Amino acid sequence: MSRLVRPTHGRMIGGVCAALARRFGTSATTMRVIFLVSCLLPGPQFLLYLALWILFPSEEKAARTAW
Image 1 (cartoon, rainbow, N blue to C red):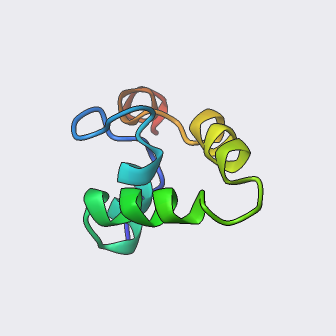
Image 2: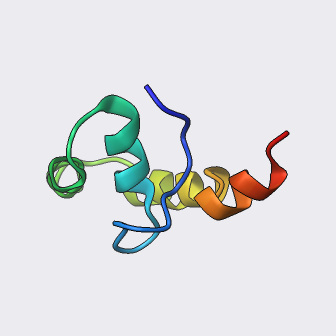
Image 3: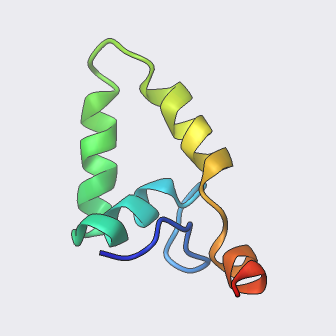
């Protein structure tokens, strides 16, 4: 498993689904479909996406701040 960083390539909106897909070893499309289906259920999915967008560093920013 890799670090949770939003990739600079292959992301659509914020890169959260692409980051989660990379972390769990699945495709970004699969993760996006899972997210869209989960939006049909009641809950704070959209707010969670926004929070993860803020919390996950961008791949380029993480590379600059790495030791």
